[in-house]
Amino acid sequence: MQQLAEGKLNLVAARIRERKAPTLSMAPMIDCVFLLLIFFMVSTTFSPIPGLRVQLPPPGKPSPDKPKGLTVRIANPDPGQDSGTMVLNDEVVQIDEMFTRFINAPEEATSMLIIQSERDVLHEQIVQVMDIAKQAGIDKIGFAIVARD
Image (tube, rainbow, N blue to C red; front, side):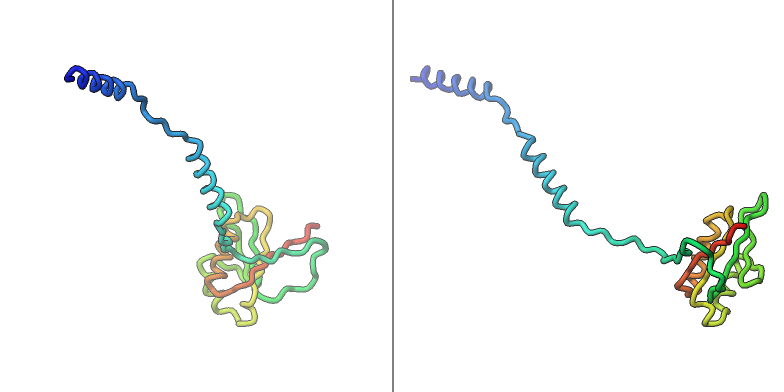
């Protein structure tokens, strides 16, 4: 009887040693991951990127009417210079005094700022003028172009 019990134990021990490790199928997990990915892509909403509204000049002939508001003309920088000369309503101004000029301008003039720049003016200088205008409370910013001869 003891031999029979030992034989059964040996048989059970042999089966345990022969047992293969369980395998996991990756296909259902990949399906779940893709379903979650699709769900999040569809349910995600994207918020609009804040920015500035800019009035671009209409194509065609330039308007002979002088626009109302402040006008900043930016000339091409001289060789070796980073920024061009800025003229605010026929007065030469520097970038650091631009804010006080905007604040001290009459109320009807601060409704809109028109930026008129030449071809080689750096975008950085134009963006600085736009930032200063926003800080001074000017909400509308437009661009004007110079007609080529």
